Image 1 (cartoon, rainbow, N blue to C red):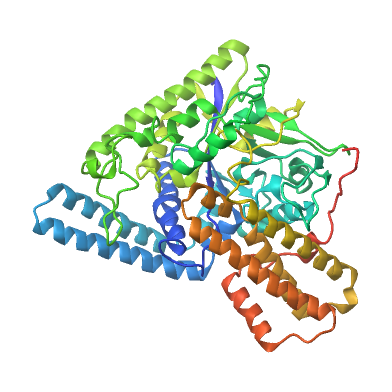
Image 2 (tube, one colour):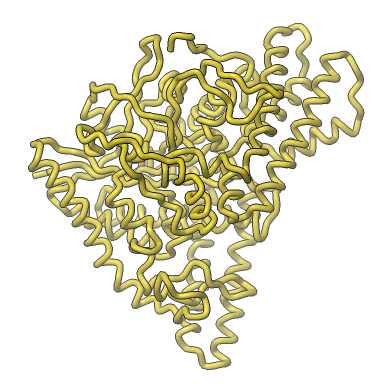
Length: 582
């Protein structure tokens, strides 16, 4: 007898890196994630299906990631990347054989087999990763969620037009790639803001005054999306768990500064992550949006590098790599061990740990759902959302853990695996609640994206948002002066603004993970935007645009060629403007 439902949710996203560097920051990120996470996930699903099981995994694919995976230039890059990794493993194997390092030699052969198999699988699916995900969804084994188009941080963007464009582009991109409308959206950084009179955190054009803003939930429901996921503290209050704080020392320092003025909300004991609620912050009676809540207990078991399964001493250590080649030959050893103290990795020993870890996770899910069922008589839901890249990229054995866990859950008569849309249709929730502004992680607020290191980025973003909306309004109000050149110019301007406003740049700056790269990318998109905006203004004013400027536009489009079907009108006006009483 089923005691409750379980949803495994993996969010896949990378910023736009095509034509923006290769190593250490750039297309290698995309190639790493594809080789170590996206393709292994597909392989795991295929293996489960071949065994007669129905995995029902939910995967979020951000639109900007989809655009890159579908780009032919990525396919060429990825082939070269895989062959490079194979050659590096062969080179390592020769050296380990020469020096009699048998254990290291076995791991070198492991890497060679892994990348050869990846290359073979990539070619077997016609080098079309997205089509393979689409096929899995069409066959009922997978549910794909969307995300904000370029992963813009919704609560801090200064214009409702920006949120509208991020959401509309997400839905349009999803339809193009997957042949249907999405049901759910992973809000970038799980960040939410209700409707209220909002004051920009930094001045816009020298002014910093409040104005009415729509709630994030309004853009979700207006575009036909039924649900999104929030962190548990946004639902209940109380202290939240920082999923990345163990991984980045810089975040610990930022949290130390923010914590001094932070006071957690009083916990609301009548709300529970086991139930599904509706949220609506509009005044016009719009359809409310369903919210699913991340389970904090199971989250820590997987997220924490110190206390979770990835911290098991037998698994591959992510940080210590052998150069040239970048392959990893050492085990985690312990969470406190520095790089010099890491012991050699043994694949068979690591594999032996997976059944115990998976059984423990499944047992915890069963314990939580059974406890709730016994207490209330209801069949609750447990939602376990993670960044997909944790499985395979950060934690090499992660896809195998996922396979074992899904197998265990599918064979457990107390737990029923479910898609979120399927669960929503089954439950038909009716209770509307209010949730506060916030995101995931320690403190549940914006300090990772807005702090002394990133404040300057928002000044540039706000300036570009205002100019984009101004030019889009001109386009809407002057149909007689439209031409193909201006349309191409404004569409590229919109792309640059959306790439500029990706939340990845502030995250990378705050964590120091790739700070120089993030600052450079943001600055480059800002400079490109300004030059394109100047060209647009010249055309509006009847001034000639130089030949070199048109070549610049062409080069921008060649480099940043995503979202061919972007619409200028999205930036011209808000479809359903907020009312002052909202």
